[in-house]
Image (cartoon, rainbow, N blue to C red; front, side, top):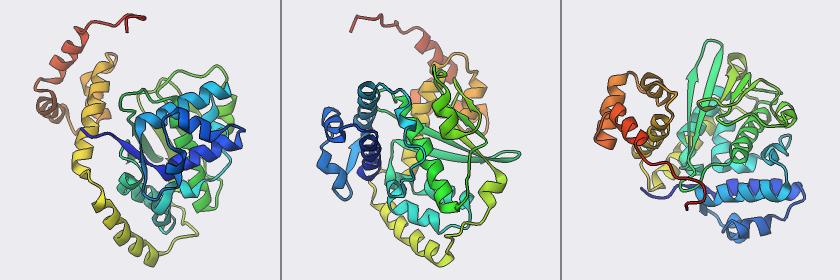
Amino acid sequence: MSKRTTAAVWVKGIAEMLAAEGMDPCALLAAAGIEPAALDTQGARLPTEKISRLWELAAERSGNPAIGLAQHHVVRPASFDVVGYTMMSCADLRGAFERLIRYLLILSDALTMTMSEERDGYRVTFVLFGGDRPVPRQRIEFIFVTVIGFCRWISGRNVHPWAIELPYPAPLDPAPYRAAFRCPVSFDAPRCSLLFGGADMAAPLPTSNPQLAEMHERTLQRRLEQEATSFVQLLDDTRRELAEQCLGRLHLSLAQAAYLLGFADQRSFFRACRRWFHVSPGQYRSRLSRLPVEQPGTS
């Protein structure tokens, strides 16, 4: 399948944050294989692997493992490009997230988002694909603080998530997480997610404008149609890659894997695995368990 990419305008926000932290963004971009001039080129997109490498270098050279949270108080509306305008014109935050999910391809086809209603709120779940590189935690954390900051900006209120889930181990120093998120954070979780209260998601946005929302809807639909990847195909590709990850996590039951992938039942998951891998989920997991484990220093 084709390489996943992210709009250069998003990476420009990363570069601005690194500069504000006293780092040399041009040197970091060049070391990651990104041409700095690309950040100012309209419509430019960058491979997901290079963005992950940029975060690896930023964490290494800054000596700050929480570098992704460093500028959590700074709002970066420009990072959302034209999608931000339609989010602002929505009636409430729930509608804004629905628009972000609908038009996310304009910003990135390396990230997918879903939103589900829970008893007292709405959970927004993120799946970020790094391609040939693992995704650094700093990259996910920057996405979270940027999204949360934008929510506060368009709502005019001090909105905070009720809870956050992150799929990696707890840090040695939790202080930056407390400062940035101001809510409980669960580590080693099976997903990346933000849980927002129902009242926050339903409160009217001061920037709401139904006429502009309709105009933006037509404009963004044309932008979306210009993308080479069909949304349906992207969703199927995304589920397949996530299925490979879930089946590789032996502590997850097949029922849990089906639930995390958004399947209505295990039978639907079974049929999808037959189509993707030509074997059942259980057979695919058994095949993974028989693969030889690469020892350190052998590659």
